Length: 259
Image (cartoon, rainbow, N blue to C red; front, side):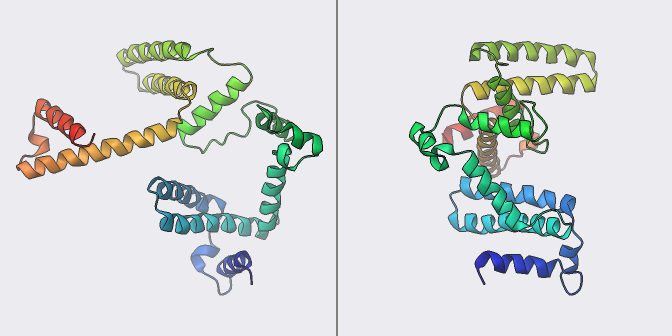
């Protein structure tokens, strides 16, 4: 039995209502979806840590999610795992004519914008011709904002340079200040969202992935904060009883130690 056939057989047995695992058998697409997202994040975490032993395990967990969903789809008469494999294989060939196309396409090589043109054609054929079609609503908000901005830019709806984005950020910041004065939570949330969206567009103009940038900032903040906590513990002082001036001083010291 090949490796993948073995895994498919194991999932089939687990989902068997007679003699399988009760927990696995009662799951559906909605209940499994959060685990799928979680496993994708754990893959990314292993990569960020350059932990290849963990990466092997996490990729296995992510593959299990694909097999799980495919098995449920097969039970429902929609498609099976082989259909998933055929689908992605066909898509990769279709989107790489400079590799798998005819002689003329291969000779022409990779063309700027060809990937997006092929995807746009696929969206039209799917029944939704919008430039924004197919951007999953369940994506992390920063990632989705960047994709929305990129797609809009492909059809010309974008600032000509980063100066325009900076001006928009200052405009949105002022609107947030105005909203804060109204004491209306819904409007404050809306204006804060507009500000974040503008910042994400600046990241796109700077060729920076917004989600990655924030993830790095989170890690940096956590390292510095933990270092500051350790400094307070070593001194016998309590952070919560310290003045803002002392906290700021210790924060700067932590930044210096970890620079």
